[in-house]
Picture: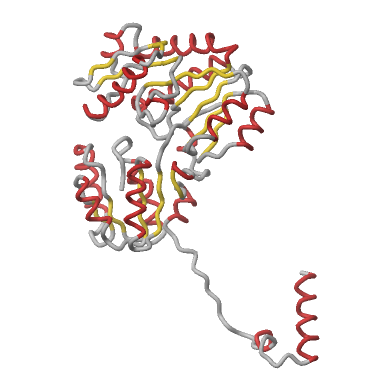
Length: 360
């Protein structure tokens, strides 16, 4: 079951793994990408017999009808809330699941980082697909001593890539739109509520729900109670939180559900070791972001609230496989040793066998 934000990759990548592992597959795309679904349906129909791979389109009722079927394995990509529903449905048939979910992936920038490079890549990772990526940076933690300099780099990059005025940014062919008006309204409401609670707009802030437009936005001084600090944003908005000691950030992360990705920009070995050793996340990336998704040598997946199981490469093959034990009987003497009665001779033979195994 695939989502709408990357409707091709989210279906085709696990399909490749499932076929490689010898399965038949039903694909259920998101109802919010009908044009892409039509193309994918033609490709699937041309490439596979319907008894091997079938694509079934529809809305929530279709997903529910499929989840009522006794599948061996369900692979779902989407939100944690819907992931819980999928897992509940799978439990009725004791079906195994792979859940690729999301969450609030933090990005940490300390004073030792190359600030210009960090801003360049973080702004790309945050704003590609208008922030509608499960591994997009969701909250920025920046060391207080370099906060202003880092934000200047971020603002310069936004201006260079999309424009300097709201009108220029809205007209940019390089900034994606929200998937539909309901999602645009949700993201706009997060910005407006944060501002009403006293947050500062450091960049952007403009939005037009009817045009599904939300400008690249940086927010500071956000009250912890603001909804934007509680739920995954899934839009081009980045809350900025200052810190003085990286231990504060580690405590903040550990007090919340485990994220799908955790990004650290630092040249300090002690910061790397602390974040790596004292936190848990689906993936951790140092001085880069997003590209762990494209690395087929790495397992991609979440932990806890951000998912379970992995995909990509060999890890995807394992997700759709059952490691079945197979044992063939042969020489009978070792087996006879476990049969009673346990005579002195039997005990000596068992002792000799144990000694041989220990030497191995």
